[in-house]
Image (cartoon, rainbow, N blue to C red; front, side, top):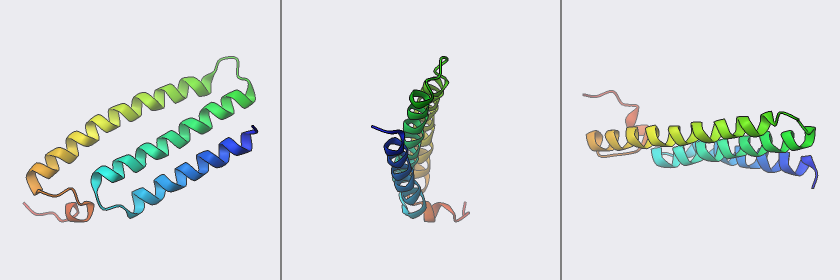
Length: 101
C-alpha cells in the first residue's frame, strides 16, 4: 500500500469528523466526532513515520501522546456534559449557548 492511500483515509476520516462537529447538536456526538478527527491524525502520523523510516519513531511517539490526550479529553468532556445535563436537562449544543441562570 502506498502512503497516498493512508493519507486519503486520514483525510476522509478527518472530514467526516469535522462534518460531525459542525452539524451535530448533541454534545456527546460532538465529542465522538472529535475522537474521529484525532484518529485520523494518528493514522497520518504513523503512516508518515513509516514512510520516512524515522529512526526515532517520532510519529509513533506523537501518536501515543495524542491517544493519551484523547483519553483525557473524553474523561473531562463526558464529565462536563453530564454536569450540564444535570443542570439544564439537555445535552443540546444550541440550547447551551443561551446564558440563563
